[in-house]
Length: 157
Image (cartoon, rainbow, N blue to C red; front, top):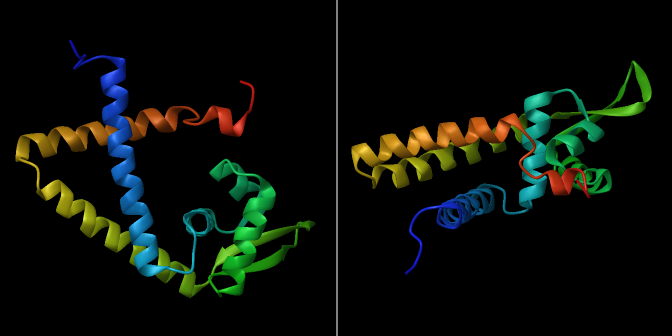
């Protein structure tokens, strides 16, 4: 008899939701920033949220190799979405900040994501929608409490 509750079912349901969310994330970036990869867009978002910020901080926030973030930020700079400046307090560091164009791009993608998510949530009944929103809130809180992908950030742990 197939299991309908428990860890495997719960994980499969979360994985299905994750796939749907990733599809939304990919398509909304593609719609408004077709020349960017999802990683480049994520780097732009982190820079916008932490301005001014160093590349090493962006890499840590994203759980990525610094060289990957350097390449992503170079691409964003070449597209006039990011600007770089030498840190006056530490000349070995480069500070990153979004350009006005970069901020506008993030805002357009966020607006599109809100519309798509509102449409999906609108397909749910009121009770289910309230439960889903409460679940999203609890899930986001739990994910923020710890490292959601420790094997990527700290291999071997």
